[in-house]
Image (cartoon, rainbow, N blue to C red; front, side, top):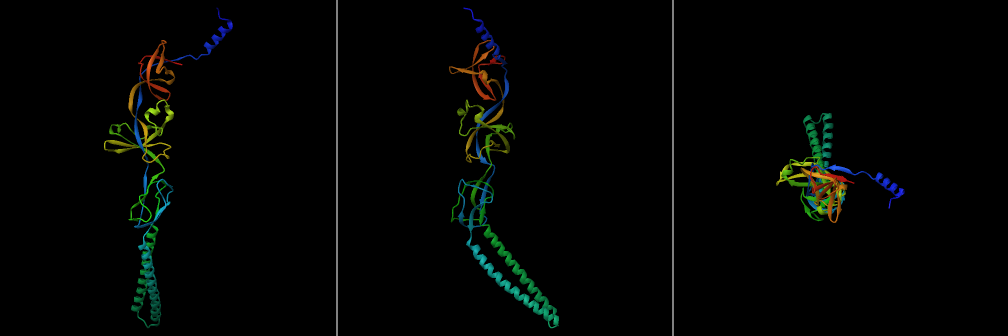
Length: 328
């Protein structure tokens, strides 16, 4: 049976509209070798709110997990001895003020007598000196009282910066010493801290890209999810000191604010380059549990795919240099 002109015309139209297949010559090329490691979420800096005077904690205004602003009142430390010293200082100031007033009266009297020629210059000088000593002694006592007032003000412990409270090792009613920790805070900005074997010290530099896995995902969970399961960060600092055989580096990445401090997450760092065969992901198809690519001669080659990066899949086995792969 011969095809009708209508069917033949439709067939010609379909073949004419089909996109031609692309041919790719397989060739090994250097690719970045990524290694999966764990990094720890840490604040850029940890801040410590400390007591500046010794005494008893009267009020404690924060607890673990609180978000506080810079300068916020963390606690109040009270030293009852300072209140007693203030009262004693007030009494000394009143007494000295009375002596100063009497010295003023004596000086004015002797000055008047000197003007009349009854008193000597020596007596006038002595009265002037006594008045000067009384005024300076009063000023010194007032300065000492200001010191006590400042110490009482320093009983209020303020937050050294904005952040989240990590630990509060004290409680209300506890006696603390000057310099003792009242609360530990983590700054709002977090980083990932890497600790890698020292052989990576020469190949890791500030500005290098680092891939961060999704929260709670392992390497098996990431397979098949592609690039959307990863985020990219940048190495901000490589510390120049090797610690117990490890090189330490800090990584900047967005969106770490909801992580716990000390939480570990999977990251991928480059450890150099290696030779690999990559083909477009569209050239690889699966059937009956196996993966295939179509060659130019029309045959199918069974391949073992690896990582997929930027639309390119690495072929671990099944192809060699010089093979021509046909993509749809």
